[in-house]
Image 1: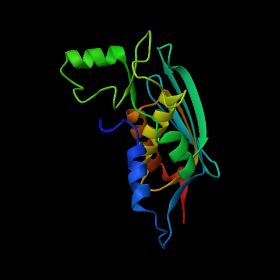
Image 2: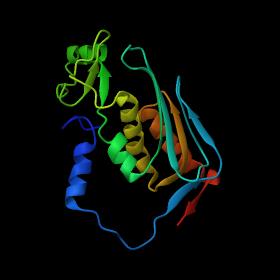
Image 3: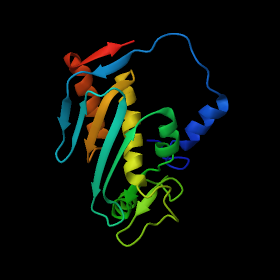
Image 4: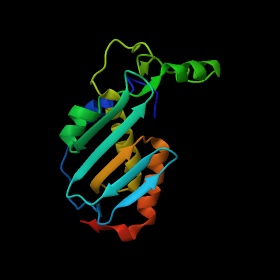
Length: 184
């Protein structure tokens, strides 16, 4: 993730919309999941199952009273992405930031480009969505699965995921072509 701008993808969406969208000729190869696949981490799971569309169900669980357990399900489309996902900022726990600062790291991080959750309050003025953390995790997943190289048809379900788990998932999908087919 690039720790600049406001910690979301909204400025990139706005730049693309300002540049304009053009329909292109040609076909797009899509990965259609035919058989479920699951990848586990130490305390996390990501799976995909057949689905005639692209849906994500994401659950996070953080030991913070302002985050806690959040689950969101979205049928992903360009409009849903722009309205419900792209504006969600990256976030962290204040305890993690304190540690990073002591280590001389995260010098570019600020309340301008991340939401910071302490145990007794949210350091930023306000959240953009009541469930902004889980929406940002969905944004992370969408960015990470780009490495599949093709759009995906399926329902991805994630419990306590992150970039590392998302990367393992991409590798697992690509290494098991018997579980999917290309559609044009």
